[in-house]
Length: 555
Image 1 (cartoon, rainbow, N blue to C red):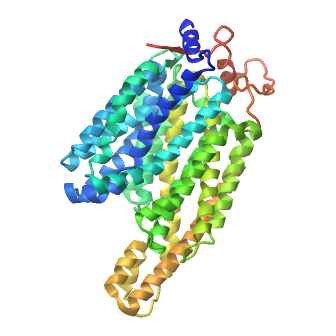
Image 2 (image 1 turned 30 degrees about the horizontal axis):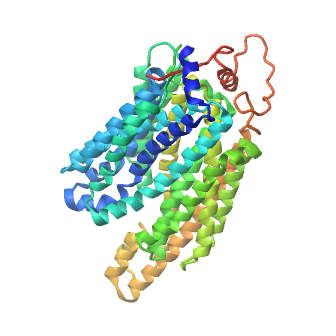
Image 3 (image 1 turned 45 degrees about the vertical axis):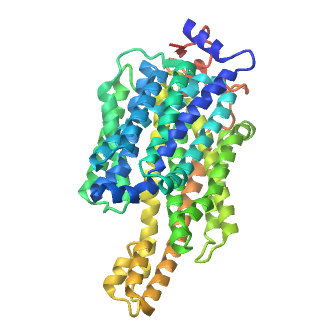
C-alpha cells in the first residue's frame, strides 16, 4: 500500500502531473516502433526476394512470422506482466526487439530472417499490452486516461501508415536491411529512459501464474489467426491446412476459457466478458479492424490497378485517412465527455457506413475529391469507434487484470485485421470472378486465369494483345469495380450492425474514476456477486478505502 501511494505521488507532481505525460511519450514511442514494424517490410518484399531467393513458403513466413507470433503471445505476456511487473516485461521486450532488429538487418539466409522475425514478434507481444496496462495504472483518473488513450490511438494510426512510406524511402536509398536498423537507435534511447521513468505496477492477484493456461491460449490464438490468414490469401476453406488450425485453435481457446473459470487465481477473469461494456468493446474493436484493413487492401488495389497510380501516389491518396484518424484520436477525449461511449462508438460506425456508401460512387475514372472525402470520413469514423471501445474496455477491466484486458484488446485488433482480409477479400473475389464468361475472341483458359485477380488479368491481357487483350482488360476493370461496390455494401451492412451492438455500451462516462455523476447501482439480493463494473469502481477508490488496489512502485 505504501508503494502504491509513493508511485502515485511521484507521478502527480506539483505542476499538475507532468511526469505522467512524459511516461505517455515513452509509451507512444514504444507503440510507434511496433506499429511501424508491422508494415515496414511490405515494400521490401521484392528486394528481399531478389537478395535471399526464398521459396514461396519461406517468403510467406518472412512476412507473416511477426504478426502471427505477436498475436499468439499477447495474452501470455499481458498476463505475465500482471504477475511479475508490467514495466519489467516492457523493458525485456525492448531488449528483445532491438536485438531481433539487428539480427534481421544482418540476415543472409531466409531461415535467419524468419527466426529474427519470430523474435521481433516475441518482443512486440511483450511491448504492446504492456504499454496499455502501464497507461491504465499511470492515469487512474478516467478523464485524463481518455486523453492519453486518444494520443495512444493516434500514434498507432501514424505508425501503421508510416511503415510503407518509410520502408519505401529506405529501400530506394539503402538496402532492405535498413528497414530494421531504424529500430536500434530508438531502442538504445528508449531502454534507459523507460528504466528511469516508467513506474512498476502489477496486479494484486496472488497465486501462481498459470503456465499451462498461458500456453493453451497462445496455441489457440495462433491456430485461429493462422487459419484466418490462410483464408485471407485465397486458400480453400476446406483445405486441411486451413480448417485444421482453425478447429484446433477454437478447441484450445474453449479449453482455456473452461480452465480459467475453474481456477482460483485465473490468468484472465473471464467474467469480464459477462459485462456488456467489456464484451461489446472487444467486438467493436474486431469489427473496426475488419472494416479498416479489408477496405484499405481493396482501396490500394483499386488505386494502383484501376486508376493506374504509382505506389507513392497511392500512399499519398491514403494519407487523408491517416490524418483523419489522428484528428479523431486527438479530439476523442473531448467527444467522449460530451456524448458518452454509446453515442460515440455507434456514431463512429454510422459515419463509417456513410463513408463506405459514398465510396460506391467510385468508378473506372479518377474522382480525387470523392475519394478524399470518403477516406477522411472513413478514418475519422473508425478511429472514433476504436477510441470509445478501447477506453470503455480498459475502464471496465479491474486494475489487477489490466495486462490481460490490454492483451485481449490487442488480440482482437490482430484478429479483426485478419478477418477483414479473409471476409472482405472473399466477397471481393467472388463478385469479381462472375464477369468472365463467354468473352468473344478470348480463350477459355485465359478467361479463367484472368478471373483469379485483376493483376493476373492484366498480365494475361498483355500476353494476348490486340482486341482480345483490350476486351479482357476492360472486362477485368469493370468486374473489379462491380466487385468493389458489392464489397462496400457488405461492409456498410456490417458497420450498421456494429452501430446496433454499440447500444450496449454505457450512455455516459460514469463511475468513481471519471469525475462524472456515479452510475446507479443495481439492487442485488443476498449472495449475488458484484459485476466487473462494480469491481472497477472499487478499484478506483483510494487504497485505504477499498479493495482491488494496484501495487505500484519504482524499482
